[in-house]
Image (tube, rainbow, N blue to C red):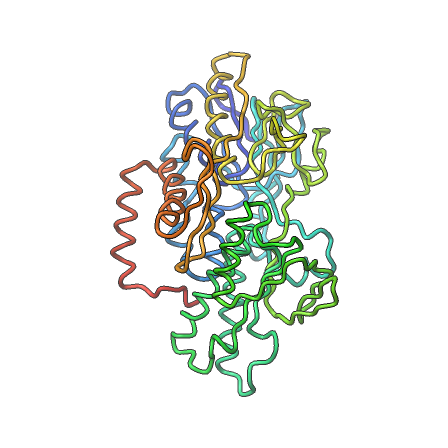
Length: 443
C-alpha cells in the first residue's frame, strides 16, 4: 500500500485523458506546488495522446512519437505524482482504490497489485467502444480507444499495402478495403484521413497499387444519415464531401456479424474487408459496473449529480465519458460524452477541489455549455457549427475558418498542459522539421 506521507488532503485522479490530465496539472500547479494538498494521477499507460487525434495516428498522417506526452515528466514539472496501473477495485469504507498488477509485453509482472488511500477520489477513465455484443466484432475488428489500437491498425494497413505490392496475383476483393462501422465523428474523420494517406503511401514506391481501383473505404451507419448526433445541415455537408472522395456510404444498415472476410448487415448485404474498424457507440469500462455499490447506468457510467459527486458517496467524483451527469432542460437526458464537456467539467472540479481542501462545504454545480461541433475531413474540408456565446445562436462554418477553429481546440488543450510559450515554440519547431519529413508514417 502506498500511503500519504504527509498530513495533507490526498486527491487521487484515476484516468489521464484530456480531462484528468488537465485537472491534475492545474491542481498540481496550485495546491500541489503550495503544499496544500497531495495530487496523485493514475493511468494504465506511460504516455498521453489527445484522443481526438487517434484517427490520424491510425491513418498514418500523425507520428505519435512527436505528439505524445510523458506522464512522469509532466508530474515532475507540475508538482503531482504519477503512478502506472489500471484501477480494478474500490473500498469506500477504507477510502482506497486498488490497482491491478502491471505486466510488460513479455507477460512479466513489473509492478505488483497496490492500493492507494484517498480523501477525494476523482474517476475520469473515459469510455471504450461498445460493440453491442455483435457476433465477431471483438475478434475481427479494431477499435480506436487507445494509442496502441490506433498504431496496431496502421501497421495492419501498411502491411496490407506492402503485401499487395509484392504478391504475384491481383488484389482480391476486400484485401485493400477498409470498413468503418459507425459514422460518428471518429468514423467520418477516419474515412477522409484514410483516403489521403493511402494515396500518399501508394506514392512512396508502391507502384503496383492503383488507389482509385484497388483501395476502397466503406462507412456503415445504422441511422439514416452520417453524424446522426449533429445538425442535419452539417451532416449533409459531410455526406457530400465524403461522396466526392468516393467513400462508400451505407446508411440505414445495421451490422449483424463481423468475420475475418468482411461484414454482414441486417439487409443481407456482405461487404468484403480484411480491415474493419469499430467506431459505433461507447460505454464506460466494465470494471465500473456498480463498483463497491456505486450507482451506474446501462453503459457502466457512474451516475453523478450536478456537483459531479457520485450519488451515493460525496467523496467520490466522476467526470467525462465515464460519468452520467444530469442535463437540465433536456428531459432526463445526460450530458453528451464530448471533449468539450470533459474540459468544462475539469475546470469546474479545479474550483471544487480548492474549496474542499479549504474546508468549504458548498460546491458549485456543473452546467453544460454546447459551443458547437467541428468535423475535420483532413486536407479536404472542415465543417462545423458554432453555438451559444460564440455566435449568439447557431452559425454554420466551413473551410479555412472552420479548420483553424478545429486546430485551436488541440492547441488550447496543449496550452493548458504546457503554457502558451512552450506550445508556440513546439509549433514553430514542427513547422520547420516537417519540411524534411515524409508526409505520412511509412512503418
